[in-house]
Image (cartoon, rainbow, N blue to C red; front, side):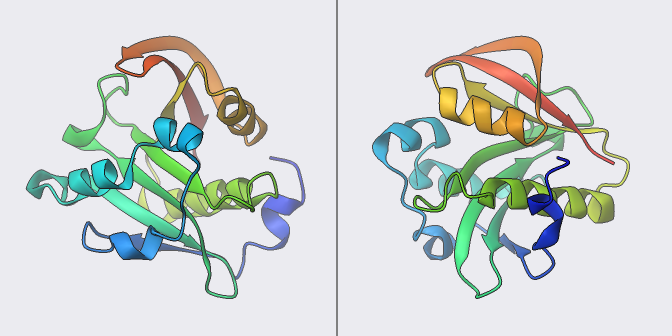
Length: 171
């Protein structure tokens, strides 16, 4: 992440925790069908966030740029809500979305920089952030690698096809 865009202008950007009741906050991030397939539908995402056992273990975040516009969204899972491919003690990243029209312009990089700051405050002993990305989702694979995620070489079979497991050390 040596690129200056990761540190130059995130000071006025922020992460806003959101609950299962805040779906309307991220409705503005409408993905095209080919991306929605990989990120999961908002019905699916907010259905999980509204489950009673999600509290404290699955958290949604809106990414807000300086003018107050919502430009990104993601979910973190940990503890008993972590997926089967994530070892104990990790936090996993899910349903990462950047508003179309802003993709490829450093917004995803800023989102991850904000998440790194969050980790240093909220999960200082967490060794890593992990995610699974569909093997067919070449644009996402390239974007994750560009912002410092490393392919572990592990694979996980899921209903949507093989998932590549990526890790980003934190702290």
